[in-house]
Image (cartoon, rainbow, N blue to C red; front, side):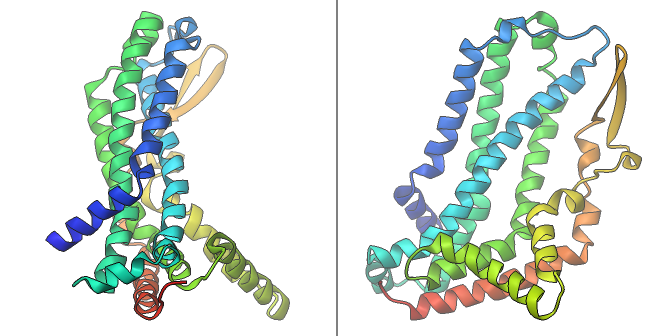
Length: 291
């Protein structure tokens, strides 16, 4: 366990963007709140303040999650490739640390550590933004951002999303690690080219599009499996605002579909494929030397 802790610390030392990028995103949001037209924001009398707080917190979390997804993808593609490119792999192979431990530490950094860093940054940013908006905006809008229950629900939502994403995107992470351990150059190109080649070959020779369908479901299908998205699930409510109707979340608790996620065959078939790809990445790491 101590070995893995040091390996993860190594990733922080070598990849300062892990914390610098979320810090920059949070700083930009706070600057926008400080100097933007926040003071003009107000709520219609019939608009529920609780829904405003939900949308405020979820939008901030979604922004950080989007940035995190892009960075984590790049990190997975670069982590094993960079070791071979700068020949630091020779140093790490000389230490009493197995290749499996190295690969697993990088996987844990991408799927657990980086999301936790962004989670902390999103939380801190949300608090500072709520404070700034409360001072600059109208009392009706600023007061809608302070609901203790919402903040607690957001913590649960973040932690659930981290765990669910780590399981769901394990095959994607495994594939990116395979490319990172195998490619001699242009890792980004190879990561995109191989799936496109497989989809085109399937389409030309078999006339089907199963690979494209499965890839699309894996990349974008997590919300439909891990959360309640249908109106019949009670996760949404419709509120009349003047002459219009607005569809809003009924509550963060009602979004979570833990049972559906854990019992979905897609979840565990993907996890099994991810383990196989991870084993392949470890094998490549053992055989590949510097570039």
